[in-house]
Length: 242
Length: 263
Image (cartoon, rainbow over all chains, first blue to last red; front, side, top):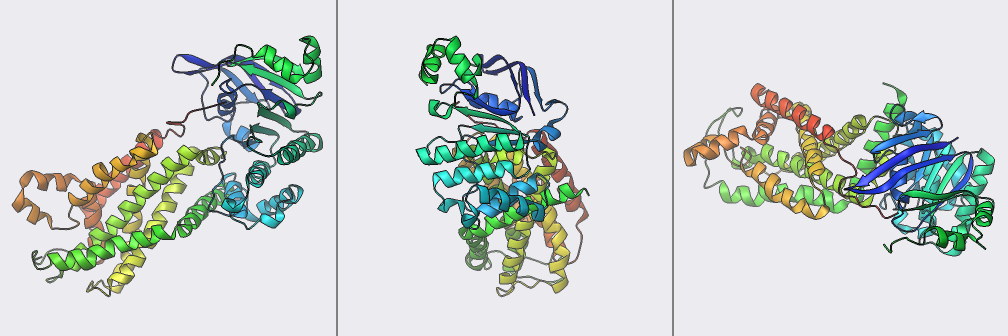
C-alpha cells in the first residue's frame, strides 16, 4: 500500500504546476494541505492517470504507471473535488454503473454496496435519485463508490468542501477508521486545517512543490509553530491569491 | 469474452438506456421531429415532387414512402450528435472521469458507449416506423427485420462521427456550430428528401457533393434494407466511413480537453 512519486513535473503552458515533486506515502492517513492553485488537483490528475507527467515517475503499490495502469486502477479508489455522480440516476444505479466499469458483477457489487452503505448510514437512500440528496449525502455516495472495488489506495480531493461541520466530521472519521481497519493508504487533499490531527502524516504543497512532510505534530515542533495553521502560514507565505 | 468485459459492457449500456428513459423530452422530440416531417413536409411536397419508379421500389411510391429511410437516418443522426453532446457535457461536468477510472482499455469503453448509443438509435427508429405505417408508409414485414443490421451499422457510424466531433469541440457552448456545420449539410446534401437525379437536374456540383456525402450511402443502405435488398456500394461506403470515423474518434480522444484545475 504505497504512493511514490519521483521528480514529478507537469506544465500548464510554460508554467510548472508540479515541479520535480517527490513523495513517498505508505499505509495510513496522509493529508495533502495547500492553498488554491498549489497543485493538489493537478497532482491528483497525474496520480489517477488523467494527466501525463512531463517528467518523473509514479509508482502505486509498486506498480509503475506507464506499464501497469490497469493494475493500478483496480487497486485505486478516487473521490474527485468536483461531483461526478449522475444526478438523474439513483444511488444504486450510480454505484452499479461504477461496479460495471470495474468488471464487477451486479450480485457481487450489491453485496459490497449494502455493506458500505450500511456503514455510511445511506441504506435508506439506496433507491433515491442523487438529485434528491443533500451535499453531505452525495459526498458519502461518492466515497461509497470509491470503495466498491475494495481499493488499497484511496485518493480524496477536497472531499469535504462545502459541507457542514457534522458531515465533514463524519466523513473524516469514517475514512480514518477505514485506514485502521483495512490498512489502506489514503491521500486526503484539503485546505481546511481542522481536518488535520496531530498524528496524521502531513504534506504541505505550494507552487507545485512539497514544502514539508512528516507527522503533523513533529513538523509543528520543527518549524516552531503553535499549530497547523501557523505552520501552514509560514510555509505558504508566498502563495498568490487565486 | 472475459466476464469483466461483459459486466462492463452491461454496465455502460444499462446506464445509457436508463439515462435515455429519464429524459422523456428527448424521446418525444426524437419522434415528433421526423413525424412532423412525414405528416407536414411530405404532404406539402408530394404534389410538387413526383417520384418515378426507381430501385428498390417496384412501382410508383408516395413521397412519404420515399422520405421514410431518410427520416430514419435523421433520427440516427440526431441521436449520434446527442451522444456527442453528452460526451462534451460529461467532460465539462467531470463525470467522464468515472469512465476513465475503469481498469479496462479505453477503446473498449468507447466502443461500449457507441454500441449503447446505436441500440438507442435502433429503438427510436423502430418506434418511428411503428407510427409511420399509419401514414401511408408501406414496408414489408420482413423489411423491419432486414433493416435492423443496417440501422445498427449506420447508428454506429454516426455515433463514431459524433464522438470524433466531441473530441474537436472544446466547450459545450460551441456545440451549436455542429448543428449548422454538420447535421444540416449532411442531411440536406443527401438523398434523404429527394432522389439524386432530381438534384443532378438542378445543379451538377451539388449532385456530386451529395454523391460523396456518406450520409447518402446511409440513406440508400437503409432504403434497400427496408425492402430486403442490399445496396453493395452503399454498404461498402458506410463500412469504410465507419472504420475511418471510429479509428479517428479513438485516436483523437482527449478526455481532459478544455478542463481547468483549481487545487
